[in-house]
Image (cartoon, rainbow, N blue to C red; front, side, top):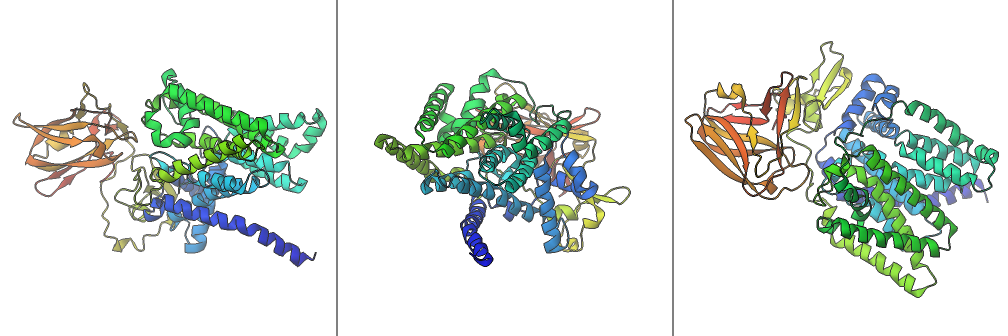
Length: 591
């Protein structure tokens, strides 16, 4: 066979993977178009990009986080800025759109890779099902902070490492070196990979019980990992951004319910209990164990083993490193924060689909029927309840407020020495500012936008949520002396609420005390409140001096408060006066 024929054959063999990759990106856009329709830069995506542009990408690799590295996140953000520079001549002009496309590409590549490496031991229908499930994994109410963003990709790293290790044993030496380099990148993004690779090395040693031969086979894996671990260990610590201590009452829900059962029971999650979860978990363990026992394919048994080990390690590590998760979940009423469980969920989905595929090709007719019925049930669950993960008609977690990223660039402020600019990104709260070199700020078109710079709080304020509303715990509105000194009537009041990423049932009332002692009361529905958004109340144009939110039949919400360095507290309120003027609360987001 000539060289041309070999190259043509390679290209043709890659075509299905390329097609699947782009189909995956389209599906992800259909699933969550909001990052494209509302181009904003969110949270660490902006902070880390700014760090890379201002201090250098090598510096960002080492200093993006204090507790562990996030190499892959930094690499993907670097690629996004370079694509923006290549297309638009500026690293941030198309940054939101290109971060979204890079994110779509990452998640689609994981699903496509899963489809490809399972060829040979899984029927096509189950491989296709696995591909779709990885793309359509339910993510509760918060998928808009995941799909289309780069900051959360690290949670998929343990699954990627399992796929790479499985592939590693089937390739030539030079391909292994490339795989080991990618595994190094994985370990420098999610520390759980160290434990997975360590168990892989033990498994490899047990092949021939020859330590010297095992080290020789894995030298390009052992040495880089040992060096990386030496740099990483002194940094590790903390609770991964999740406050709170371990709550034993929430352990079953966090460790089993949200982590393992949720991908198959998400439409009925609110009806679950610890007893039901234990029962479903027992059935799932039996299914996986039975499949492993009857599987004839050594490849299938091998990847099932590694998936199960990685799942157990990741689940334990998640709760051990972030014990506060056991207190955040609320008796199966919320799934937030979904990002911390999605990496475990994809391992569960992968392991389950491999298990069902092995049952479906069993020689036992009853087992084959069980496999087909289980696959059909999965198709029905996801097909009938697609509204849980398809947010084509509107996102469940709106992030964009008044301004998109281009508006925020127009409103950016220069540093004192004029070398850098500060861009307020989302979340629209103090502390979330993207610092970039002044030469990447292009305000040439800002004059046509009609934007007007509004008051911006300096660094002396911190936003905190109030206590949660309850039957015996009203929320006091701290209106402050600056409002009382205004001396004009208020016709509308905007109060910023936090729902804690859940729907809170019931009714509450706004109570405002006038300066003559009388009280204005307005009732409102708690489920209608949007998380981290202002809710306005039309008033009767009086001068109000005190206020509070009182529960009627429900609770669970908070108001946002601005705390200054002297301990003074003010509720995040926007006042619209009868003379047409508007007053903002220092340290709080704009409308």
